[in-house]
Amino acid sequence: MLTNNYLTNLLTCGTDEAGRGCLAGPVVATAVILPDNFSNKILNDSKQMTQKNRLLLRDIILKEAVSYGIAEVSPEKIDEINILNASILGMHLSIAQLIPQPGFIMVDGNRFKPYQDIEHECFIRGDAKYLNIAAASVLAKTYRDELMEKLHKDFPVYHWAQNKGYPTQAHRDAIRKYGVTPHHRKSFRLLPEQLVFDF
Image (cartoon, rainbow, N blue to C red):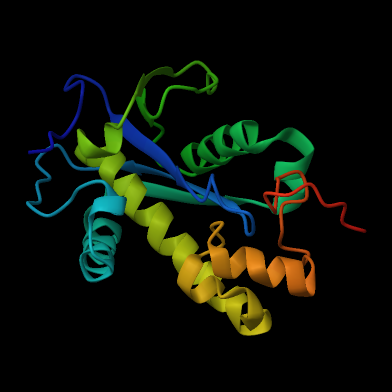
């Protein structure tokens, strides 16, 4: 069972990202402050949940959260500063939206850069341990999935409605056949073999 806050004496937010390993689309980061008394039996790491439950939980989180922030970092920015820095930038941007600002930041993963003067701690698989990180995970994944489904309408040959930009066989086959789009991350190894794209 997931627990609420790591610390109970500080206003605490959880932060997470979605889309870090994708070949296309932005990375989306979110931050969430939950009420101290928040509990939910089905909230978990978003990757371990069904889409139906993720959407159900998203509505609950948006309604009941003390505050939340959602930020996108574009493929262009990812190519400029690399995916790790882009993920952390997205977390910072999402935390900046929180009102009130937290006194402590709980980060999913093992890498983070200090945000202002707020203390933080990283938790490997934190989205499977703490409700506020799990909530951020759900918001990030549902927001990004819907964004990729919209982009799919303009670029259907890449099957983003199904693969959400991840490196599936169908996605890579489409890159081989049709080349890349403005939404692809040019700094990523888009195909296993070494090909040179004319960007």
